[in-house]
Length: 291
Length: 280
View 1 (cartoon, rainbow over the protein chains, first blue to last red):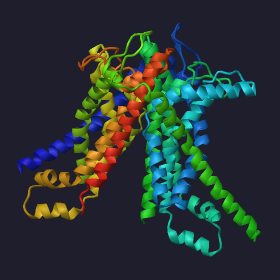
View 2 (view 1 turned 120 degrees about the vertical axis):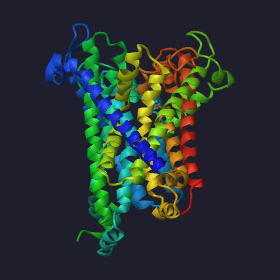
View 3 (view 1 turned 90 degrees about the vertical axis):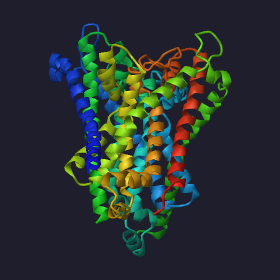
View 4 (view 1 turned 180 degrees about the vertical axis):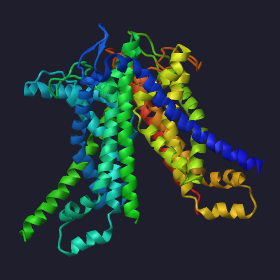
């Protein structure tokens, strides 16, 4: 009986450690960002001034950069990832070709982001620069557009795999009913499958968005590191994650340092929110389908 | 009733579009792989794997310090996250509905969603700041925080699949609860647990952002976990951003090594899960 107690205790200790890591992380980030938030108040998130020399900090340029890159990436990647999930969930459910495509999609998620960044820097940046010269835009090469392109590719697996799972779960009799009424496959997908799989797709989109918001290395390497609000989509900028990556080790002075932690804290809160929302939707859907 | 021809045409066009867009979404992967291997394979030879990086302007040199560093970091991260993660996973699968479990699941989900750069800040605040310097230990702890949720979630999911009669049979024979878990449940789930651990390792081996201000990077060989170390992803980042062709060459070589490492982790993880699976 003593062994049983000791064993149960050891399990509880492991659980406690995980919980402590989480709370300690939240507390550390809060304490770390307090000096900056005290100094600037809520204006911190609405001021566009980022001036280490005079110790004035505002995170607006990075909020704008993060939102622009993430949503642009999402818009570009959505048709692609939905196509893959429809392909795997409807047109090719089994077979060697289908499992190859699945493995390739997994591979997209497995490649380290620094390699995407490196490739982006060496191949995509010159490519975009040439495009910009052709269209008569100032040819930076680096910038929001380039970062979004890389990001849009990196977040394909998140939406694709979740959407595929829910598309596969759509009950066969629903689809057969539609077919028996004379619907074409396209009409079945549009009117039956996709509406039924709606919430799962939404969860996938939220997870992708969370990933895009927090992605650091690939974005840092191609976004051009400009601390002002970008004038257009082809302009160099900085995201919340990339400004931390660039400036954290160089930050001198408590306020500078604390401002960067505050940006990290905001990032933590937003991604946590998306994570919980996505998980909530997934749970609700699986329960609904299980019924 | 719309014309049937038009509807069939739409159907065909849609199917074509789906195939085309799917192909388009996989194209960058082929381009990246092709480019990386074309550039990187040339750089790899024995000297590349066993020598230190040379200073600017000197030909040759290798990435041995980064390989050692990645090995050190992954070992530290595994040593911390595997025991805690597996044990917490066992708790979750044993107490499915308790409020502690529900709460822990949310915690693990949030931990998994935290951007890697923020984990770097956390490890900086916890380890680097009190110690007063960058170290392999702090990098390992950052990676451990990233790996922990993967191990917990995976262990829980694997143990859930083990049929309850296995446990009931053991308990009915009079085996105490804790010995049932250790001698029956864990061995039955071990392939899945190991495959999850390998997946976690291949995920963290490629992470750069948490190491930027923890492990920091180091031009020299270092086995001391209290000092900064280099790591493959860090080396790729630093050399990729440098203006020197020779360093970029090293970075491409290191990219190939890193991709192969991550791929090997993924493939072995799948093989373990498949081949070594206990049948019920």
